[in-house]
Length: 100
Picture 1 (cartoon, rainbow, N blue to C red):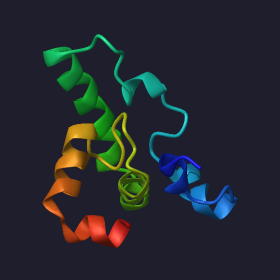
Picture 2 (picture 1 turned 90 degrees about the vertical axis):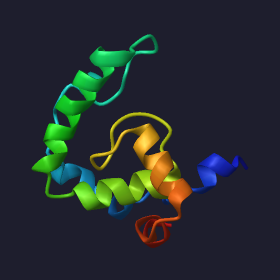
Picture 3 (picture 1 turned 135 degrees about the vertical axis):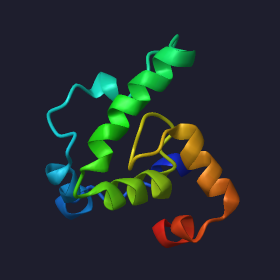
Picture 4 (picture 1 turned 45 degrees about the vertical axis):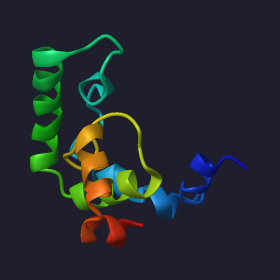
């Protein structure tokens, strides 16, 4: 079994139900995930737009917890981009230990 898959929650609706209440529900997913060649100011602007959803999202904590638990490698989740989540994990923050 692939260790990446082993971090995913069981395929039960209860594991993902929080997504139904996300402020991003129905939004263009391209806002949250960068094209392969996106760099610099374009990437920063797109991520800022994605994070605007997170500032008013009622499930932002659950979203971040999920992304940290499964080590989501792409996109903006819970108000953080990939680098920010990796920095949080590397810091050993209590937020990460709580999400694990």
